[in-house]
Image (cartoon, rainbow, N blue to C red; front, side, top):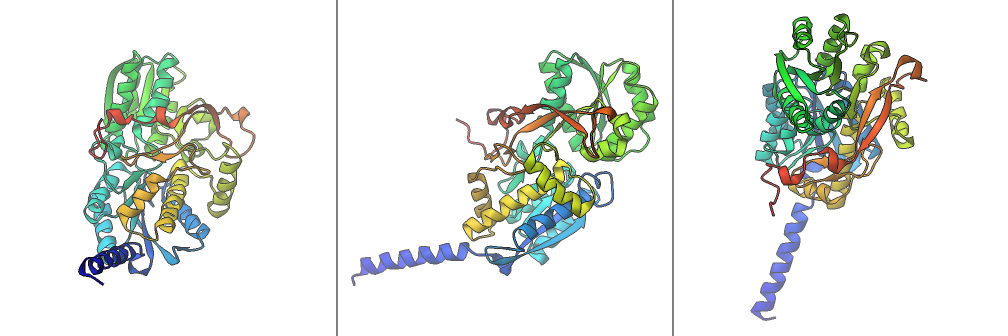
Amino acid sequence: MNFARKAGYAAVLGALAAGAAQAEISDGAVKIGVLTDMSGTYSDLAGPGVVAAAEMAIADMGGKVAGKPIVMLSADHQNKADIAANKAREWGDVEKVDAYVDLVTTSTALAVMEIAKQTHKVVLISGAGSSRITNEDCNPTAIHWTYDTYALAKGTGSAMVKEGGKTWFFLTADYAFGQNLQKDVTAVVEANGGQVLGAVKHPFPATDFSSFILQAQSSGAQVIGLANAGADTTNAIKAANEFGVVQSGQKLAGLLVFISDVHSLGLPVAQGLTLTTGFYWDYDDKTRAWSKRFFEKTGKMPTMVQAGVYSSLMHYFKAIEATGSDDGPTVVKQMKATPVEDFFARHGKIREDGRMVHDMYLAEVKKPAESKQPWDYYKILRVIPGDEAYLPLSESKCPLVKKS
């Protein structure tokens, strides 16, 4: 055998060895770390229900992926970026976690994304909402699954303006998510010929909304936009109800409303709210079948965040099966190359910026007389196609997006 042929064989064997080394499961297990709000403002929409959804996904995989066990860790990040970052760093260094999951609250998501970027770990974001996550702060191994502030603005914001709500006043949670939501909705309102008369920022979290509601009332705005979520939203709606805001002619725009919020408020208070959602349990046979299983496990119907966690994990696990590897960049490349079509997502695809684009739904909360059974809360007014719901790549500031 001559030298050139020997060198050729050596090169082929070297390439095969490199491929085999890459296509394997590190540490003999696939480890996911669920970071969520287990006890605070967002615990009802995420929290224990997110953990339950992750457990369902692991069980449906038979507890294994690519022949190796799936291990789940979970922790309460308390909606604090420093706690989330410290836990993510600890899990990465000590537990060798491969993927961070949920991350409700934008500040915690951005903090963990930065750590994951340094270590090439996967981040599957369901609960956090800021469009920054896949725009100026995008990350090669982060995927934003369930919804974002741009989609909420395109849905609820544009619908309210088209119904005649031309003047707006915002009650805004004073952190990245609330500020980004106000910004995105303002752009939609103004693009449709509306006007923002003012805004007031409230602490996160907040319990007493009396002074904020009075400011909104005195503005004379036709629409009061609630740029907040979870218990902040329900507390604001309760205060508005006490002050007769809707009865006096103003409209409330719940810019991020979850089915858990409607359940907490009750239909007599929540009826008539317009909202945008990425998932509704009673949409079709597939959503009902999965949601029934979730209800049997938790005693509640799932929010879009909880359903999104299951969906994102199943897509992640299938990408590991396909590649035989839990290497972050390898898995994310496979996830982006594979369409998403399941009980959660319709016409889903993961773009180069990490945004999972899928159909969204404009809904209205039913009147008590219209509800036929427990959790029968929404009328779906319109399906918003994914390409319409999310920020066009042509407008993206994400450095991962190739500009033509």
